Length: 230
Image (cartoon, rainbow, N blue to C red; front, top):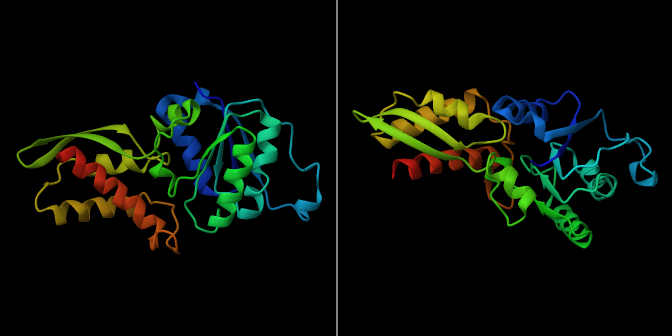
C-alpha cells in the first residue's frame, strides 16, 4: 500500500476530483496527507527554508495535481522533507510543467534516487518499473476495460484500470446499451460522455503532442474500448 501525499491548489476542482475518486474506489487508506496551496507565495525562490510549508508526513509517493510551474519547482524540497521514493506529476495542462522544467525536475529527482513520472495527461500513466509508481498505476492510469456485447450492443463493461479522475467509470456506464457498429456512432456517444463528465484536461494545443491534452485523453479511452472489443 503506497502512502500518498497529494499537493493541490485550494478551490480547484482538478485535484479534489482525483482524490475523491481514489477514496470512492476504496483506496482512502492510501492518502496519508493533502496540502492545498492557496496561492504561489511571494518571493518563493528567496525563501530558502520554504517557511510557508507545514510539517509534512513521511510517505512513499507524492502526487502533484494541478500546481502552477512556480510551485512545481519546489517538489525536490518536498521530496526531502517527506522521504518519498517516487513522484507522479500530472501534466493535464502544458503550462503546469513545460518541457524544460520537466527535464530539470527529472534530473534533480534522479540525483536524489527518487523515481518520477510526468504523464500527459494523468490518465496516460503506465507502469514504469518502480514498485511505488507501479502499484498506483495498476489501479489508476491508462484505461483498461473488459467489454461484453450482446445483440451488437454493449451489455457490460468492467473497468480493470481507470482514469484517476473517474471519467473512465462514468463513460463506461454511459456506453451500456450503445451499438458497437457503426463505430462512428459509438465514438460519438463516448465523446458526449467524455465532455459531460467533464474531462478537466486543457483544451490548449500542447506543442509536444501537437494537439490538446483533452483530446489525447479521449483518444486513450477510445483505444481502451477498441482493444477490449478486439
